[in-house]
Figure 1 (cartoon, rainbow, N blue to C red):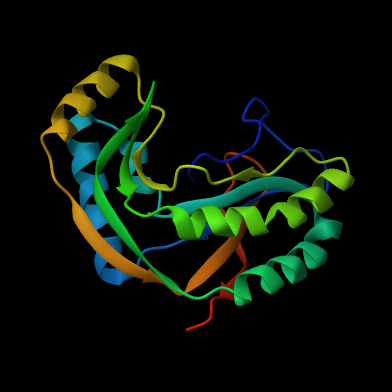
Figure 2: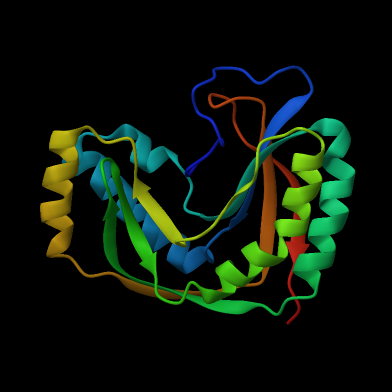
Length: 195
């Protein structure tokens, strides 16, 4: 997954604690386009991880105890179900130093507004001694991450010359969870936005 855990320095979370990710997935056509880009990246730069990660935009990631899950879901439902669905346009490639190539979200405002409204959930989580949520500040869709310096430089040079443009509606957000950074994510809930 994307940026992932608030603190990647651990291998396993304490018993009863999980990592949660709130994400938006592109629709089927854009999903296929992005997967094609990720597979090209894997083949071109020898980075198998790029094609293994599903295309998504992370809205929030956090750790919480499983006892908090029902309350978190209720609060997220209140926030998300009150918001209208919106269009996302992916326009051009970008890079985060020192190791990530991504597709830029042309208008990040809907994601930033969601992040602001999720601060109440963040306060709840922190109130129980968990670290702060990582809320989206720069909405993007990762093509490849954890690149070594040489691969990163070659990729930046390659993608500086490339174009990408695609658009899709966000009609729902998915809450995922996993026990540690090596665990597969499991779907916890789907939050539908208003039409």
